[in-house]
Amino acid sequence: MSHTLVAFHAHPDDEALFTGGTLARYAAEGHRVVLVVATAGDRGLTAVAHPLGATRRGELAAAAEVLGVARVVELGFGDSGMDGPIPPGSFCAEPVDAAADKLAAVLAEEDADALTVYDAAGGYGHRDHIRVHDVGVEAARRVGSLRVLQATVARESLQRAVRWLNRVGVRPGGMTAADFEHAYCSESDITHEIDVRRFVPQKVRALAAHASQTSGGDDIRTVALLSRLPGPVARRVLGREWFVELGRTPARHPLDDLFAGGGSR
Image 1 (cartoon, rainbow, N blue to C red):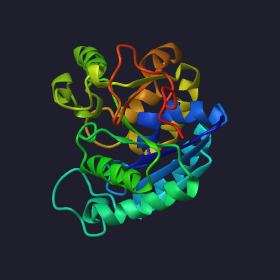
Image 2: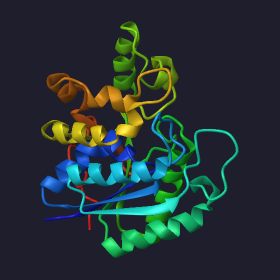
Image 3: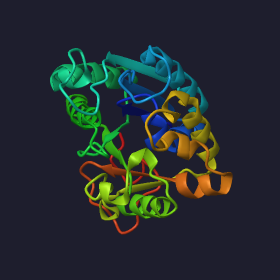
Image 4: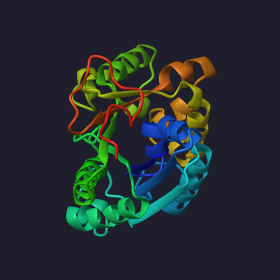
């Protein structure tokens, strides 16, 4: 039985970072995969000449093609940025209800079976990511009868990897293991651990499509680091993606299928 999966993300490149393998896997298995992006990421860090938003929209289209996405929907909000005053017209300046109306319309049109958002902390805390969570949960409530899966990272696994990188002098995105103490979700909260090892080459190509996000700042960018990993290392580092399903109690062994375990229509 085929399903429709809608992945809701804040900026171009988030779809590849957090769910690239999952989107590629379900597209390859014959499911309809729809990608909804709130902003063009026009306030992102980069060394690329502006206008950045147009560049990143092109990168998004290229990455979506690599992952087998059937449809890309851009909600058209401005990037809110990491900090400082919230810019007028940005995603975080839009009331949650109004943004949820736009997403709910896509969910209803697609007759979606599942929606991915981020965890309540917004992963590493970006305010656009937190807004994706809030808007996505509200849109799903309005539509009803679909499961909501929070794309996240198993915190302990991430800290182990970052701690090793820090020991060899690499600070991805300028971060240390301590910076993730309250980010993402604990391994004990994970309900779904999706095996995407077969689709790591697609995920890496999708990451590489976001070339504007490989430069800028004093430390190596996360997209640059992950898109340049040697094959065997990439398969180990990128071969799993994690989700927490709203309303589901974590089991001892997380599920390996977003549509498994009941709850589908």
